[in-house]
Length: 295
Image (tube, rainbow, N blue to C red; front, top):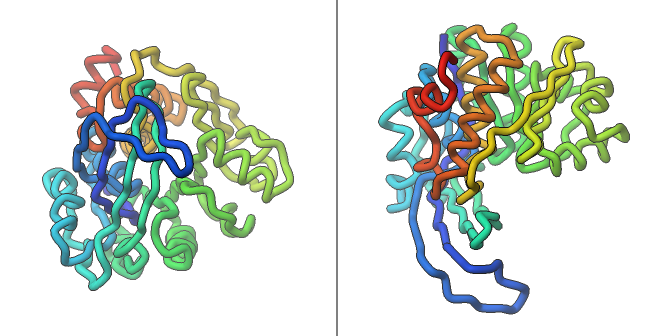
């Protein structure tokens, strides 16, 4: 089985601060790290580190940031369908304060030039799950959602960053994953309750809502599921949500039930929160197994 991820690749510039800057304020950072990032790449890496076979489809530029953006993913996933384009590689500036909270600004760059057409019919036929986010051109993602549905494959859409899409299109996805803020935005557009149950009832499809330190909830095929979070000392929440989605997809790809996949995903996301960094915080399958014996 193969997880096909159509998504973004970024070079992350990570600034460590005591507190977040206010408008008009200049602060000196305690440190700066450069790492690979992007929601698509983070989620694909998390799935691959958890043992899934992953094919990644996206785009990078011809600039020095490109090698930073793709370096980690190239070691564990098939990146032959990552295009080189004239636009600059996507880049994110991430501020992290002493409490581990983050503030992020992203320049999409080459990510907006990624073509969902690179998910050719042969690749789509091989796919078990197609995983998507919303840091690429929305029209390309919309077309891919329809193709996945027509092909009878499983689609997981992480509605991040929160973007207004037609309810009919969202209903074509097998599972929509949102965090608390994204759920609130989506519920506002749909005029329904912001819970997983309220959104799922409105769209008539599966919905999973992550709740940070309160775990996650989902409604899928009529079943209501709730799992608690893993208790850890939070150091940095960057990429934890992406880690959750990637490990969730990996577990589902192995044929495990959604509740078990959610339980494993919150463990992996908890491990990521306990570490500094973007992709460097994402655990391997063995690390997640070690944290949860028997899974």
